[in-house]
Length: 236
Image (cartoon, rainbow, N blue to C red; front, side, top):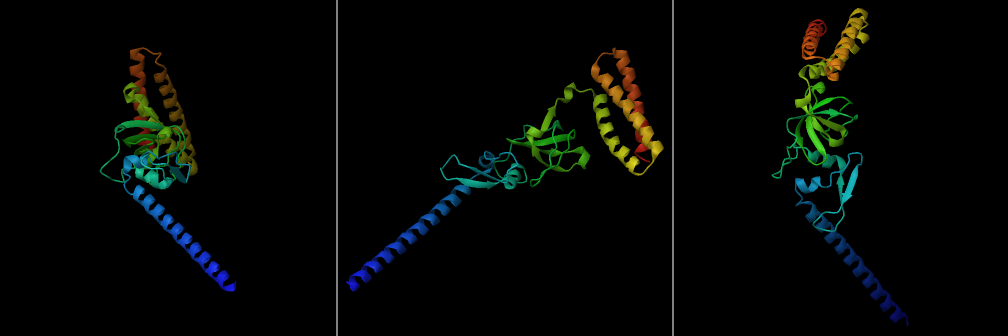
């Protein structure tokens, strides 16, 4: 009886060991299959899984298999930029476009370009969910930012003087803050008056309620104020 029990116990242990070995082999095979599925993915296929950057990890089912693969969010954002250079490339349909940031964007992904509301951006590249470009206010640093955070502007419909007013007011606002910090009260108040004057003129130009002669005269006045302000405050 004891001998029979020992034989049964030994047989049971061998079966358990075989089952464990089979399970380990299956796990290794699954891991190898996952690696083989991940390696052939080119840039356009990876960009299909590009979601909003607020998540750290994303899991999607590839079109060529049923295995669930996890992708790191910042890594996908990096793949969306042209820094990940493959033969597939990325679309450049947004090249040469100009946009305006409509939300704050912290740029908390690899190669992300932080934006504040109202920032102007020059777009040089486009993919499914992202733009790649530069911000004049940030020393022309190039990075990526979500499409949903930017409104594309039609430059053909924008008055050049109005666009110049917008750019100048944005640049002068930084000088205005510096004058306040440096306690230069006279220059601070003077620049404030000029900025409000240019802002009112910009509003009148956008209203399109003046005659052609009035518009031309107002444009000349605005340009002269901008030239004067640049001479006085930019080199002060």
